[in-house]
Length: 603
Image (cartoon, rainbow, N blue to C red):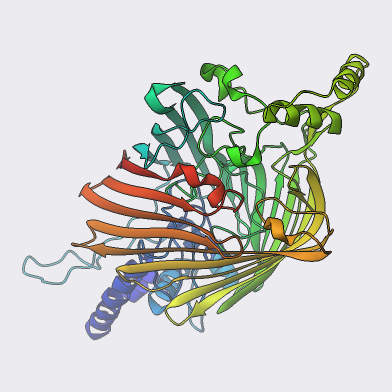
């Protein structure tokens, strides 16, 4: 029976079909409104091709997700996946109705829909009334037009501005490594998303930021402008494989924020861990990504040909790698503030990986109530291994401590330098990551588990020298999976590093008392965020925090956001860093601050 024959059925059958169709169509609309994801997902790929192309990026599942309650951070156009993936389930009757309608144009449907026929349909048949309705008729069947064949264009953009002031001024004036006490930042992202046809999609995004900072009494006031290419890729969809080429985010692992396998994209370490934008901290990279399904298993393969490191400050900013606790060996005041932020991008490097010797990743993941999978990543580490000649280190330490420089060491260093010896090296090592992952719904929450083994990973000792160790990292996350005004996400990260020597100490991971015997180093981190919406979701109260129990350090970030109007949010936030100077969070203890900002959706 064709679609037209269905519409020419007897009046009782027509009434019954109309009533059932209206109810099922309402269910479909509710399902399609439950969530939106940037790009195809494994669930999305399982739909027949005509249905998949008409639904675009919408996922079809039998489990509804809240519109805003299941993400650890807001997801923009960057393509970062949500904190909780939907549980694949049997397709609802409304979604099944859409698939059935897609197949009706393929021919007669007597004993079911043939799968090959469903895959070959390219357009819905236009639905028309059998005859012009009477003027007094109360029931008129709506006509459905074929899917548009012309390109569709969507603009998107966001602007965010904030200013902050430290809660206390710890550094005296005119000293090396003095802290910044006030900052201002403006970040803008603009992009276009073009769906050329059912097979091709183009995305282009540009980002830029302006950052201002000053020490107390407006000493060493400075600022810089930084443009950045955001998402810029081409999607090509086919029944078997979806291909994405260009600057993009390649997400791996089950946990959205801390999965140890999620290492292809470098991170912007200049973003605050507490008050920063977690999505903006993951930087897109030029890559080729292919994904598809084989039966009940989804697969992903990715290749990143060109190396990009983490973005970080070495000194001169609150998030810099070098803080006073590590007793830096040079005077930062000798670098003019107008150039110090620009000069640091290659400050610790002497050689980068060659082109095309890039990162490779493979991932397999099952479907079903519980998604179980594994991945392998072969990659260049994103932080350099810095090796300083021992004699140079002796001279620098003496100079920093105000002691007399050893003349013999100074003469030796000078002679070796004149002879062309390398006294400083900053290179990037390669490593493997072997990972297992699982995720599923447990009551009202989603549970994510990641375990990763690396046979060689770079750590740093108390003298900031690189040491190679194997490591096992595991992450367990529990996050909101039902619609609620109360939204939460809790994550535990553990790290085990075996074969630590008796005279070794891993900086910021172990206390100084750990030395004295061979051991396995342990690191534990608990991270959480909770928020509650009030006044019809116009007021959002949020708290982020992290605790590291061994070093007894922690950080807290309360935040209050008010929706001034549609697309405009104003917020007041704070950061507190507590712990001793050599603990993970106490290392940044002088950077506690209060922030005031606004976020505007431009399109």
